[in-house]
Length: 206
Image (cartoon, rainbow, N blue to C red):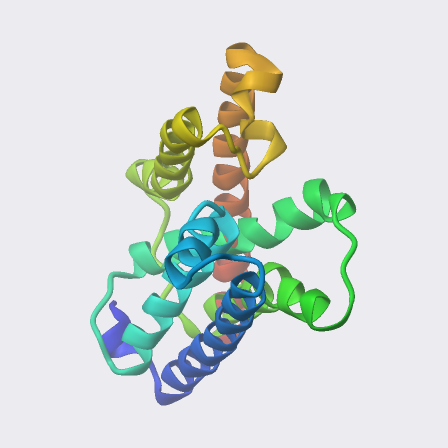
């Protein structure tokens, strides 16, 4: 079952999530532009963050679904796992590191709370729910692992690491390896939990 098989309610839900993600990303871009020297500098800065990249990926997926594009249920689930992990990791490990107010606070919650929560609920109640295969576990961690590799390469040139658990000059390679393994396991655990909840919701609605 792909996105083209989704109900009208599912496509409308996807459109709403895309709207929320778009508004949030535009606001985040506007706020960054106030501090950046150019549009390109603002975009480059934002492109360092897993949160913003995953929100952008979620936006693209939801737009595609809203317009009836065909996407495999397994790929949809992998993206939803990533955006849900954005919210969970932020609120458990990173939220205490920042103090925000006003529009910055709302924009922060947009990317870390609203889009992850809406995406998770949308998947549970409106999206296709394929069974879990061993290959799916690898699919769930492809995006975070690609991101880690990207940041390590970029950070080696810029010296900037957006997340403490990836700051290899400070934590060392051994701690980095442990953190990446832990991150991958977290994505797998969230994927299993989400898939289990989806199966339970499916049975309840059957």
